[in-house]
Length: 185
Image 1 (tube, one colour):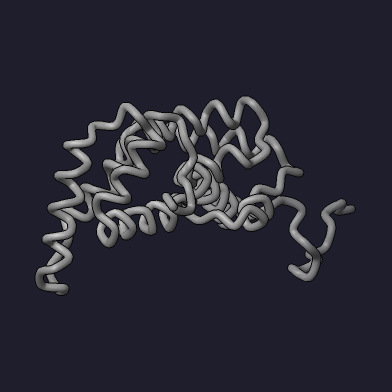
Image 2 (cartoon, rainbow, N blue to C red):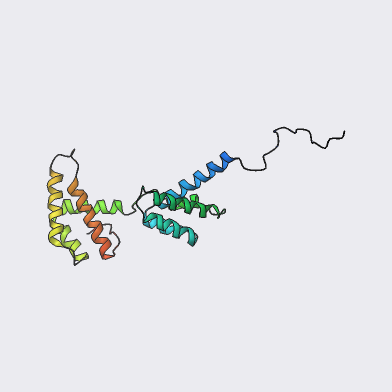
């Protein structure tokens, strides 16, 4: 009786296929990368070099509510597209632009402008209205007045009026299509 069965070689050789666990870890890493891309600030997201179909899928996800099932499914679809592009090194691109999730690159400049409004009052309002002529001067004056009163109060309290001033400045600059200036003076 001649047997053609090969003797057991053991587990010393490399597995020919990727294990299911390794495959799941890789898929999870790709999903997290896609979520990180979807959460980038607008300028950082535009700076990435992405294939058109992947950019379209992620852009659709960015427009959806943050913790919705639709967004989760859309991000899974984007991750599936990303897996087909093996040579694409998005981690490196994200690190090169220095982006982090939900980062607003103009936040520091906007905070500086808000502080100018609080410290200089009417001068800052005049300079801002000269920059954007159709700004509602009275509304801006009210925001500044409330933020100044708030700043003079207890420093430990939250500052809702200062936040409102920040949001108004940001909205007016966006409406006018202007980039955030480093200073009004």
